[in-house]
Amino acid sequence: MTSKSRILICDTHLELYDKLEPLLPADEYEVVSFSDYSDLLHMVELCCPHLLLVDGVTSSCRCFDLCREISSKYIIPFIIVSEVTDEIEKVICLELGADDYITKPCSPREIVARIKAVLKRYKAKFFEQDMIIRRGSLEINMTNFEVKYDGRYIKLTPKEVKLLQLLVCNPGRVISRREVLKEIWGRENNGHLRVVDSHIKRLRNKFPNTKREWQIKTIYGIGYMFEAWEDNRVQF
Image (cartoon, rainbow, N blue to C red; front, top):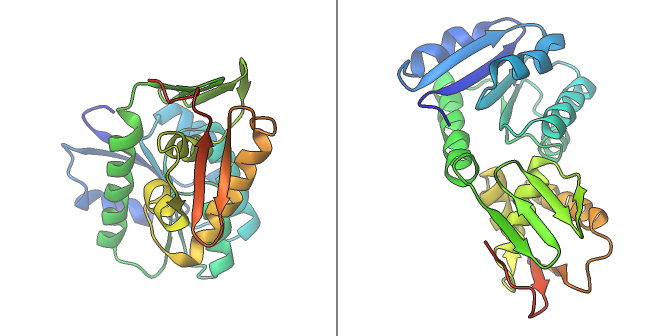
């Protein structure tokens, strides 16, 4: 990361910028705001933010589409701020890659606290990480979030790459779904456990023929375990 964390705010009414900017020290943060959702992807590419905050999406379908687009194209954390309090919508947004979902009404200080928490988690685990993890025919490049298996690239979302990294770096250890939520999404809410299950299912579907080297094993009632054969130790 650069010396300043660049935060990009997409807000139809441009209210969040006025509320949050005074709470984010200018020597630590650069805050950019815009109001047109049709410009979102262009603005992400133009500004290269360290975090994206999206507010004011009134349509659930549009919100889901934005989550898909952001998580599939960019390796940046993003937070949804919404007046919609429906639990199902929250879970779907998280499943689609959102790092947090904040419901209104909420105080600007709470939003800032969550922004800092997400940035801290990303900075510690991913932005400053420069390594390639190898296990047999599997290669995870945490610098550019590319994954190869048997010499071919496997298309994974950033969340799937981080989940795979967590499992691969802890072979033989049972990792509970709550621990995965805390490590990857920064939360321990049991109500969002299905987010983990859906990501595990997608990972398995993208690696259908790995059992000669490793497998992601379900430990019923607890979580998951990366099980690898003895001659496929993790290499860095």
